[in-house]
Length: 232
Image 1 (cartoon, rainbow, N blue to C red):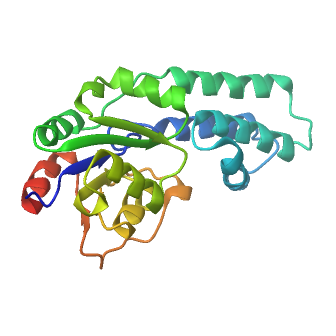
Image 2: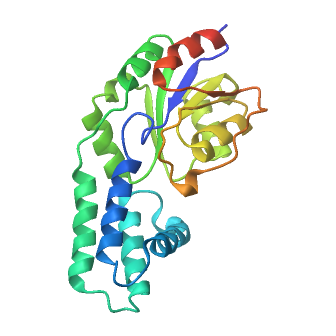
Image 3: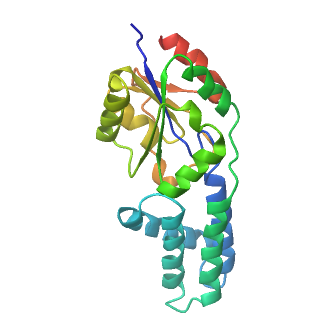
């Protein structure tokens, strides 16, 4: 009997680029409001707005744009020009149209493990945007199931891996977010595999569970097939 039967992959910044485009838009946001707020202060205000709004808008570009507009209104004391709001909306629309850029080894890693295991895509974010990115990635046919969820928590993983596999004890989750892709899966009894991306949204940060027997860290996805064979 296999120790591992089901492998879940995160999408954004695990299989394809994502955070880089948020950072570029934030730079444009800071430039637009340079006469009203110091860039560091502005980013702190924006992050606070994003935290407040997660419960309203969830994860994704649309909530990000709304949080930028809210922050712009705050820092300008409700005097933000309509042209600035229009630029922020246009920036969000550009993000939603941006072509997918697969990360190194993404296709090879998914194809390799898909031959021997059930493979899932488990991602957060706006439904339409995540479906668009998956379709453009060319990876869609490799997955046995796709789950686009509002949050990644221990109960969510327990439910997904029970529905699509043999429970979390025989499952692995591969991703770049310690908070969303690694820690809750280990708490559920599964394998949590961290593949650092370099750019990490502060809200996705968490302590590394180095003492956990089922924690692993890879330099890149190219190392995943060997790890899967090692676990068995």
